[in-house]
Amino acid sequence: MIVRSCLLVCSILLCLLTTPSRLSAATTIEVPLTLRTSLLHYSIARYLNPQVDKPAVLYQEGPYRYLHSDQPRLYIRDSQPHFSTRISANLGFKLLGIWPVALKWNGSIDMTLSPYVDEKWQLRYHIVDSIIYDNAGARPMISGFVWNLAKRFLHPRLEDFSLDLKPPQQEILAFLRACASPAEMEQVDAALNSIVIGTLRIDVNGIVVPLLLSLPDSPPAAEMPLAAQAPLDSTEIEGFQKVLEPWDAFLVFVIKSAGGDFVDAKMREQLFDLLISSRYQLLPILAGEVSLESGDPLRTLFVDAWRQMRSIIEEAEERGLIQQQPLRYMTFVNAGEALLALDAAAPRLGMQITTDGLRRLARTLQPGGNVDPLNFDWQVDPVLRELFQFAPEPAPEPVPDADPSQSPLPLSQRLWNFLLPMVYAEEVPLSRSLDRWVPRSEELEEYRQQIGMLLQSAADEEIKRNNLDPLYTEIFQHLVPSTALIESCWRQFVADGDQVTYLRSTAGSIGIMQINQHVWRGFYNLERLRWEIPYNIRAGSQILMHYLQQHGMAVAAKNGDPGYAPRSTYSVYNAGPRAARRFMKPGSTSREKRVDERFWSIYQGIEAGGTVDLSVCDIAVDESP
Image 1 (cartoon, helix red, strand yellow):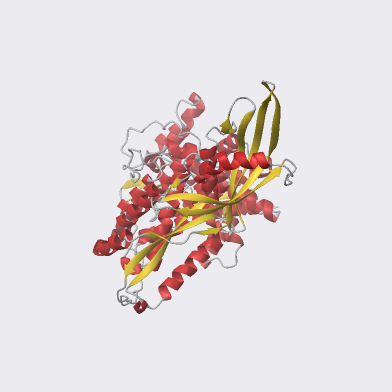
Image 2: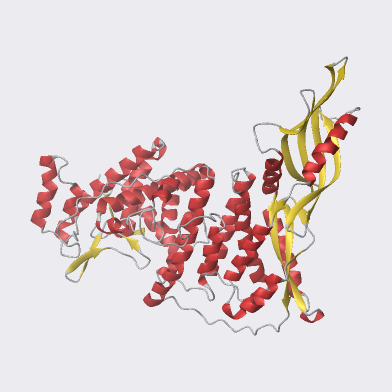
């Protein structure tokens, strides 16, 4: 139904755009303000029944004369809004000075409503018709006194109801002004000041209030051919990252706001996929693998993520999750839709996704907040981790005395550090012997054993913490080392001249598990990902477990093959939630196929009991009889 509504809006906009410009002195542009049924129901139900757990007292005169209503409901039927409510009525009268006689009735009333918006931007209803039903759902033979009570006390109450659309209208206009191109500000302002309300439309989703803007005609600008865009160089990538920071901060702010207002298991996963997918989308650009599309990069990000965000919020409304701030979320969604509609109908206005616009849009959700919605930093965000149910941050490893940029410890010292825990139990962590170690060829076996122990320990820890289904226990035990091997060849550190630094990809992926700093901003400590091998391994294991439980196991169950679980999980680890079935699709790129096949080869080798060979970053399988 959402698609149908969007198609209808697009059709109207197309008609407006194809209308000959010389027929009038101005073009009329429609910016739809959609009031979804859930908001309409919530507003009128709370107005009529402020105490949701008690019937509304519409009329009460002593114990035997009253009209009460309960279970109010607004819904759409046959393209018309209807209001229904349960009715309890009693009309008692005295006989011989007492009240023994009373006309009691219980049933329901259904009213057909005609919505309109008055000159003060108040949504109101006229009552077109009403029907009374008894408890059996039939129309009663005698209901005159109920009609009289309803017309005296219920009808006026409903027609006095109003939903104030002035605040959302003002918020939307302020947001559009914040997104206007400076060169076109005067024209945009004139168009927004011309706003009037068109004829209301009613569909299955609710009531659409068309906001009509008049835009003076002007000759269309000549379209310049777009030059082919080359992948970004390092300077351009740094500049692009600065563009991304306010957008990512905005997205995190909105997701945390929604998580604080309403969330359940399904929506939590939807919000997580939205955040992570939007971040994975940027990695090929940051890696210099693909070109950046011409135009405003922030707008491209906004449009793609906005559709997913809008769908999540609308579904939450339909499922009754948005109970306390429905008008805020209505304003938020409609503001974003207004920008896209205006941009599509009048591209010459040069509407942009500006930082001021994002800040104003975010504040529609928390109008009284003091926190800057676009604040960007690299710190661990406990609220974000808790929202998505990540384990608490582990305690830091003991900090080595040496400068992390200097050469690693000599082999003799590492051997001592490796043997010392066997003598003194847990007093010296195993990981200390791995600090800044770039193994030489003669050290690979010792290094392999120590890294293997850490990988296995992290996998077992996640299995226990998540109470993993036994069917997938061995799969996960093989998945963690397989992922580390294909991602980094089990390396955390590399030599850079005469110094040692952490392994880092061009897209910002770090260490042995190649945890991307952009994708996982706020979830993990950046410095610890760089310099603490156990922390990096633990982070990668947590991510793999999340992807296995949310994607890999679902793909395996749907296809009846547990072997699909590790393949799907790694595809998501490599490219984000949208890649969960990538390894199954014949349309995957040659690069994607090579990556998926390479992972599967490594995984099968480890599953078959093969030994990791770090000299060739592969599996050595013993084929002797």
